[in-house]
Image (cartoon, rainbow over all chains, first blue to last red; front, top):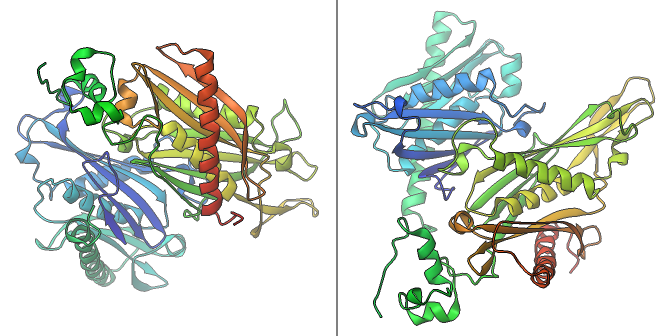
Length: 215
Length: 298
């Protein structure tokens, strides 16, 4: 379930529930870059902050950004960059902020899905939506959307970020052991999942702008 | 008389003042008489009117207690996590609380990523001090067995959207989350503690704090300010009312805290009046909380 336009302050926002993942995303931009030296004179910059609230996982997490959160922030930013038309806004920044309220495996994919919807809700021109879904290998079977329990006990986890209309992959990571055949099957399963998520993203934006309870 | 229009972005203080009746005679001529007569704020509220409040509890299953509060456009969530630990050396036979209020860059265009700001830290400190000094959580009840074991409650409050009056939303979310919290039972009879997550019992909460804040703009006292009013106001008053929520009929009489900062200075009679109004508002909030958790007696 994805709901767009949930935060008043952010230029664009989205809330996603993907399995037991509950994630809030807000986008500000294009706006001035502070500190100024980070601004790029020929294109806008995209900045991303992925953060988990302390009670989002079963063992309380320290509020300070961990290495994992910083890595995921970087990965999500790089997954969104091919889609956003940053060259239209030189010397500005588009900030994507993600707060994970509850996590249950595949949160980077859910976060990426929410971020794409939030960017669209903010009216930032994009070449395509980015839809993400993870596939994996559990008990020697290729499965779609691995949750936390399956991830701990499983053999591989592959998050995929995909642009459905341009048919291009913007994010691909793999943790685990796979044969080349399993790898091919895993990518194909993942992309099928991404296309399903894309329909839900479109529905969220449709409801926001053309729905009956349009605010 | 001449008409002067104040652009909201360029002259925000003047813009706000045109809605409220201001002692400045020039401004009286700038907006229609309807607004002058009724003294409304830019969002149509009177000075002592608050925004609609909604509360939702127990939606985050990884937390031992959680709540989501919306006050107008301000959105705040709180989660409580309980962990086993050793009691602090100074107090010995009780558990303890750790509060943290986070204002991430998501909540406002004015917040940049980085370490906690003075604003966030002072909110954390205010919440922690209130819960401890007012004895809102029975910390003796957090002791487990006889063997130097206790529960520590981590209260993490995250503001998702700062549209003004975060303090009230933070206190309300913390109160709602504490009421929603349940602790697993620990069996210490066999030497090493055995935790059973399925069998849970609620916290012992003598009373819970509800903050009611006003901002002081020129000569006006505005209840539940939204972010523009807060920024333009030079002074603030916050009243913390302690609510006894057990019986289904909330009792909101005790005052757990009062802060007044910034100009203009107020006569003590005015402060007493604000405290009375805060008690009434606390009663409304407590009613809402009881209804939300299904504990209201009809």
